[in-house]
Each structure stands twice: as structure tokens, then as C-alpha cells.
Length: 302
Image 1 (cartoon, rainbow, N blue to C red):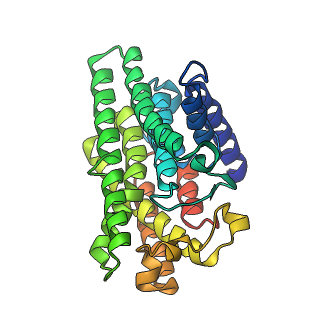
Image 2 (cartoon, helix red, strand yellow):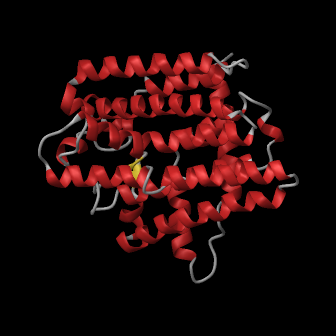
Image 3 (tube, rainbow, N blue to C red):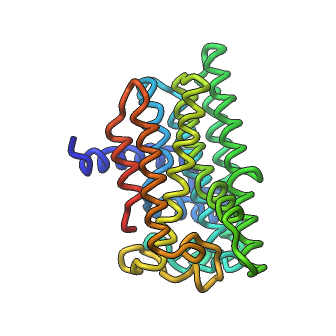
């Protein structure tokens, strides 16, 4: 397997699929739609929709799962709405993301808030449209279960809850604790990765025990991914990352590196990665591309 070529092809397919779900830039609401589309089409790894499709492939053929593209697009919209809001002056106040100006810099703060709100709402419009292709009772059950996962992992008991704890920790300063740190990483970062992998498995008809295993695997991936992100904020460069480095320290953000140091952080990334790899290798149908994708994501340089 030529991993880089496979990755390129999959990313291109996801980009084309995602473009087909974006709203038209027309009408009196055209400006907010432009800001929404600007945010989504700014590049990125397309990690979450890719993980969803590859997790589904552990249990069936993704090409035969009609609801899958709707949920892939919806999750990427939710991820991008969170980035739009995260970049705002009231949050991280970042001017660059993925090598270009952030949405609020280009469109203004008010329109960026609306663009984030628009993406969140449009994500659920998109996911709910998957019911239009349902035929059997099982189709309806899987789509409904997937919607529940999406809402839960994106909401106050998922990503938003993690953002809340992160913001309060940043504003309060004070002592860092492992409990708070892991809560933030588990909810702010890992939750959407869990959504990706468990929705893919759910739509493909995986058993509850298999879905639970993937949820644990995604937790490890998410925590390792965020710790690596914290490491890169210290050791990387703006030219490689496409965003300013040192923003965590500037914003007094609670990070694993600040609490444990670089070497311990790297060891924890390794431990979590090995456990996640073991879970993926335990399924009857191996997905070697998914296993390599996880390794590449965790040990990335940008």
C-alpha cells in the first residue's frame, strides 16, 4: 500500500463530496454563506470524515452506506464551526489558520459568529437529510442513533463542555490538575473523533461492544492528538503549522506540556498510540490504511 497516494485520493474524494453539500451563496443571506464556505474550504486534513468512512470499512463497504456522506459532511461542518469560534478575539484571538486569514479577520467578528452558528445548524440539516434515503426500520434506527451521537459529542456533554472548561481554566489561571486537563482534552478534542469513529461503525451495523471498543480507541487518538498539538505549539514553526506558535503560552492555556514537560508528553503520546493501534488490530477485518492513518496523525509535524 502506498499510504501517501491512498491518503491523497481519499482526501480528494472527501473534498469533492463536501463541496456538494455546501449551501449556495445567494440571496440576502449570501454574506454569511460566503463566510461559512470560506471556513470549510480552507483546507485541513479532513480527519474526522475520513475516520468515519474508514471505521465504517471495518464492518462493511462504505460505498453502500447511503447515509454515510451526510454524516461525514455534517461532522466536518461542526468541526469547522468550532474553529471559527475558537479563533475569535473573545477566545484564542488567532489571525491565521491553515496558512490564511481566519474568518473573523476576513468577514468581521459579527459575521464570523453567524458563520459558526450557520455551520452548526446546517450540519444538522445535512445529517437529518439522511432520513430521506432510509428504507428499512434498521436504516431509521441507525440514522437516529448516529444523530444522537453527533448531538451528544458536539454539545455541552462533549466538545462545547470541553471548550467551557478550557475557557474557564484560562481565565482563572491557578493550579493545573490532571483531572481538569484530561476532561478538556477528552471533550474538546477527543469527542468529535469519537463521534467520527462510532457513527461510522453504527451506520455499518457494528455491535454495541465493537462500538464501545472504537469509542475507547478514539479517546486515545484524541488525547494523543491534542498532546501532540501542545508539543507542536512549543517545538513547531509557523511556516510548517500554518498558524502562530506559542499561542498556548500567550493565552495562559492549560496544556499537557505545561503540566508534564516535553519528554513526559512524548511518552504519553506513545503509550496512547500503542493502545489505540492494539484496539484497531483486534477487529476481524483489519483496515491497514486506518491503522497507518492513526499513526501518521498522532506523530504528525503539523
